[in-house]
Length: 300
Image (cartoon, rainbow, N blue to C red):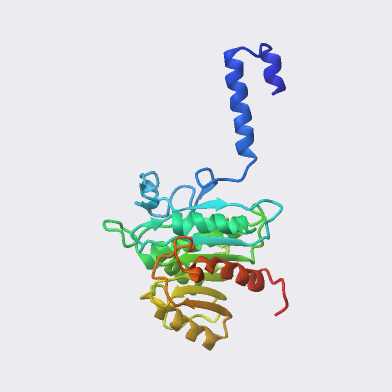
């Protein structure tokens, strides 16, 4: 600002006023929390997804808060304030049937909610294996996106002021399938990889599933299955997914918490659009679980 005063001493100079106004506005926005449109976006691969680098600049299609035609998978960061940050990172996989990404209700809204409560959230934009005409496969490319997201956040944990041993995933509907396959596939990194991100462990430390689909869950879960928090409504066709998971978790002695509400249907998001109080308040139950089981603020 003092430089402008020296170079442009006349305050009524039009150019001076324009530059001064721009400078003040930039300062204000650079020191306030990100909004959804201004958050840091990190491509999972700098040069594009392996084998599809030539497609990374193809435009996505946005329609009423949903996105299709994803070829350059990425993470959008929702950071808490320094005063409230608790050192826990959570990667969010939106739903949409693997045909589209519901970025608003299953991505940005939960990310902002978590950031407001001290968690560093990352919304994962992953490739869509069920979108007609796309070349991607769930067991290969969607898994690759999920694992790369965990590795990237773990590799940059210090930068985001989070504990690399407290990185979890939250998935809605088909996003729950992305979380599941990431949790249940082997996650060992390659210690000799040229890319240091690929040397990191790809399995999250905990998982949170909101009305998840059945894909990505093997008949036998691995012994290192992460602890889980799960939410669904009893009138959802996917309720059996949670019932089966609870059975497997008990067999493996995996810690879990499950909430099956009487009604609510499928796709209630963060609950604010529901008329049912139980659905409206389910995010508070998630915070309770994170407080007790992830932050470990009380003894076991």
